[in-house]
Length: 173
Image (tube, rainbow, N blue to C red; front, side, top):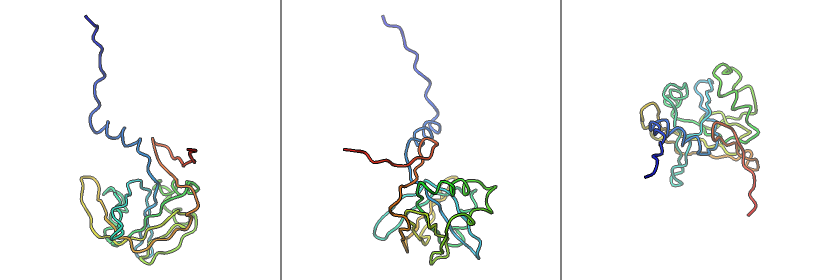
């Protein structure tokens, strides 16, 4: 006869999901939009390529974020893929208390759709809102890409994984 081994009680699915998703490394993006010279921005990792024909991507935004209404109202946005050197922007755009500093730091240009473009980005995708999908607490914005620039294509990307910011290093194979 063998002694029984006590197995740990399984986590609720929502906790197990969060624990699993924090292990998924993701590029850090700065989503921007503008209305009547009022600029908005937020940091996001829930950004994904959808298709090459037509060029499109998606961004997931919580309904409680001010960017949700700004994107809905303007029908346009820009996805700026950040470099590891842009960590200071992440700190500013992640804090509502620092809202007034947001577009005072770094270099900015204006996309044709009026959205701010970060000059420190690896790549910036100017998008027209094609469709919004409501999903519980979030809106999934499908954007058709209308312009792309590569301000810092030679730089290393900023990543987020396991509640920490990271960057890539070369593997020798």
